[in-house]
Length: 180
Image (cartoon, rainbow, N blue to C red):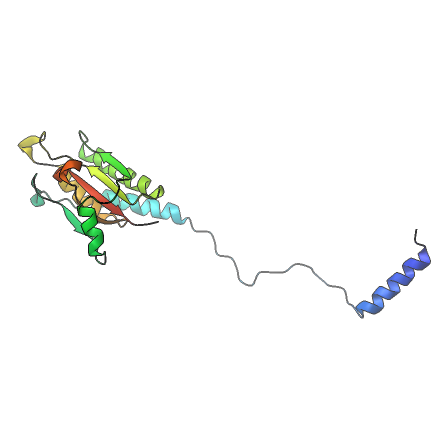
């Protein structure tokens, strides 16, 4: 055990080693800048997306697409080899949505939900089957033109084209999505 005399010696030795000191008035360190108030980015994005989907159904009845017409859309800057592979069906289909029997409203909600799900699960190539319109009035495809319009409005869609005959032909589209 140490004695009081040894403790005093150690204290004196410590004070000589440390030198002259002065007490600190406060021990809190303030940040360099004021913090910004949190912004609910995801909520704002979701609200914008809902408004966009409600207000921007760019389908024009005058732009009817015939049953046999091929569909093709490509954002600027996409490589030709990527488009060629997509059109030839050389990419693996990672998810599929079948819209047979759906109304326009149901189809719109299904497409929005499907694309969001596919992106969340990091899917790159998906197929949407919209049908050829054989059972609709006048044998004209309704959903084909609407899906064409909806996909063009989606920023996450890089390209889409009619599927190969064994994958649905002009009654389905391959869709290439952006990476997350």
